[in-house]
Image 1 (tube, one colour):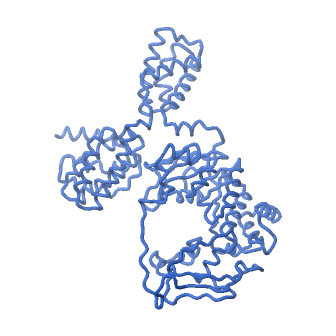
Image 2: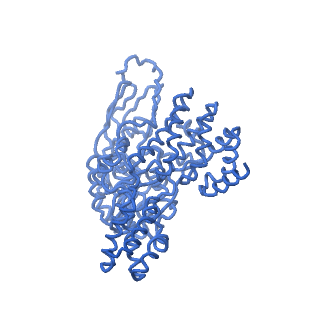
Image 3: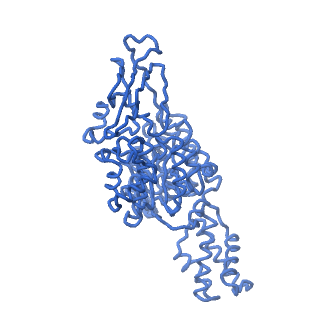
Length: 584
């Protein structure tokens, strides 16, 4: 028994996963003592898994998890499902999990059927869904193409003939050496082992040395490695590697939000002049990634001194909102003269006419969402941005300005754009690549627009459909209003209201009269700057008209979701979320 324990301890030295390593002694002990299984499962469930999971890590944890499935307590079974789901999402190569799925998947399916707790069954269903994706990947062999020694030998002969035409390819001895090289390289390819040093000094060059110069041997090795890598790796990865163009960013990093791991040891590869759409389910961390890039929090991402990265946002908060357009841009672009700024603002459609909704002398706070987006893009151009970050850029834009934005982005041949949007049409017409949040907390580049991406990843279509299995809510029924016996009777109305923003000579809205009842479903439409948001603000008592009357039922409660929903958040930074909601 002592010898067996010692052998197991030595075998577990191959586990280099930093998340699992601290638990190896407990896992070994639980293997010997079934009474410790529940406690070991509890310890594992409290771990935030962030490292990639491989077969050594699975080989030490799966036996304990399978025993955990046999525990009587539903709590332990639920924790097993949580651990399985979390670990499975971090498996980069589906083949690592292949030996364990035949036992693990049926057990989790059994738990889903037998557990009485509905919430625990839901957790098990999530784990099954994750495991099934791995199984489907194994079945379709979509991760990599295995290369037999014969296939590698054929590639080797082609590479040798192309690299060194004088090579003795008809010599039986030389052919025997190539067969051995092909056998070794086949195993390395199928293990996804493409270390140049090992290929050069262990697998290839020593066996070519008797037949050619060192230089020829090195060139053959280099070309064979590139050929095998291209043939074996997934098509998307090969496309990303082979694409021409200047690299702006090619870094590996991890990204978290609080205690949650969003991305783990993933790669972000950006080329100059490309337009990337970032796609993933709601809550996966798309905006968090963009903010992290803008704030310089992504490891390995080039600093702004080397690659100028600008967050193009139309939600302008704080004291900057009280500046006029020229002062605002100059505050953020101090290297540009006022004349340069005025000229660029004119190019973007801003006018010196006080009657214009895009009056250069107006305060930022008085601009519509569409004009704020144009102003942000103007600022990015003046800052000579290499990379523009756009989070929901089409929000608050009318059709005309969306078309303008599409043309503008497509015309910037030397600038790279990272775009997050739920406007599938905009994404389809603008982007050249899709960066997708994969299930294993990795980013993957797909060449082409949204339509091309959905053909390759059909489930991504649900990101842009009016359904979301991760989020659902219902509005409570409001109470009765005194004196309102009909849903068609007005509960709020405004008569002959006129409103002028400070600093503007002409009113944004003039002599507006309208009303709403309990049965009303009203859409306020019009071009950017027409005063749509202003009317809503007057209705909701966020702004008071200079002339006219606004009446609301004394017991009516209004929920106001603003265009910039957190425009007042700066006044509540020292409060808890509970206190903020009570204030609202």
